[in-house]
Length: 143
Image (cartoon, rainbow, N blue to C red; front, top):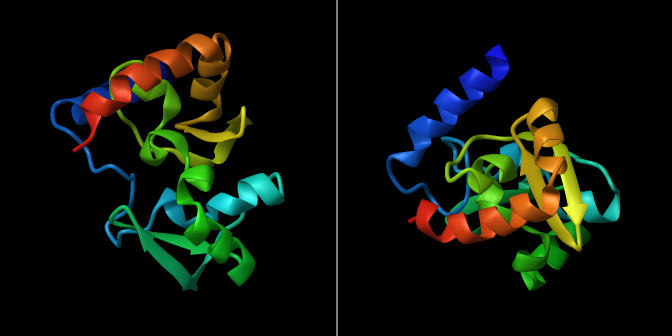
């Protein structure tokens, strides 16, 4: 319960003003440096390399190899996580929150990230409804 309250308070603090369209750190790196293509190709999160960075939507995306980088460059919308890489559950609740790149799911060919395993379990209880609500909320949450 304590983790849920902390998450709710943290998420609420972001809801006051629109966020950047891509969740990135202070260095501008998206999804904490993980390769978005690796989720699809290797079925696991893998840290990318800074020397293979590509800038898209105001953030730097890192990749494990040139093949992944080239695939992303040719179709970034296919590989980028939904909701700019913010927590899918938070977006479904009308807010945004950071993510743990190790907590992910691919559903119908789309990558979704969550804040924690506990939050992901809540999201998965009614994933169809959560995605529908997040899809409605997301346009009003970012710049």
